[in-house]
Image (cartoon, rainbow, N blue to C red):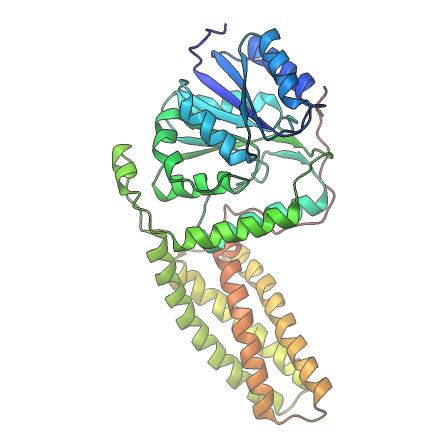
Length: 406
């Protein structure tokens, strides 16, 4: 039963120009909370900058449905709306979900229960973990997986899905983190999660059933640009999160910037050895075979050795478990590196009929260094991370057994 003014959970639904979906989906959400959710919960419609009838509809819903309220922000921005409503809330756990209810509501209780119990600090729905069932267009699937791999490579992030519109946080933790979050738009989620992880807080993940909203109006190109700028800002950040770690009793972990620097140095050392071995092998093989064949064989041999050395030295992986999986993934990165060097070699021979071997070596060395940067990113985000999402795929997503109904 809902206790007015004393919700244990407050669910914020950020909206902008959602006059068509708002009424049916808020009624559906409120019915679920009243009939299938065991904790007192309030719904807050956070209208941020709507120019249609969204706010008026929200006002009518708040008057009609107990446990529903509406807040109006003149400026747009999902992050801005969440920050304002969460900062003023009296609930124990603060959650949010997208108005389209793409995530099945049965995941709400597993999302908030560990927070109410005090076991975890932040909880996220994930579409990229085992057990998730997702219906999504291949383009959006590729973008989402690539973005989360980028977060692993650049910020050493270990959460699997930064962008799923289905998250929750303990109110006491939110009071510590929200003042530190600068973004007011779509990058808000990522920034909050990165800060939580760097502060040593426990992030609980819930595999969800999720159906893509075909009416999504997210400006992908603009959002990607903002996300890249946000990642660059976080990479430069020097926030002191130690007081938060100490307050919540989480064990200290190595500063991710220090860990990344040490890993890059070890990877660089292995890369220098591999590049030197590659150049020597290419010179030897080139004496008796065409340039492309010599390049392929030299790359293949050094790639196997490079993966083995990085597995042990750079990423500290010991034992035989996962060895073949790591080498198989390493060969995928080899394929990417080979395509870069093969393309550079082809361009060289297209421009110069019979280039000197010294020129060949120079061009291939430069291309190999570029491939090394790509290889490190994939090693960091995928090859040796057994919890990482699978490589982006363009295969059609599986269909949910139970699709959502309005």
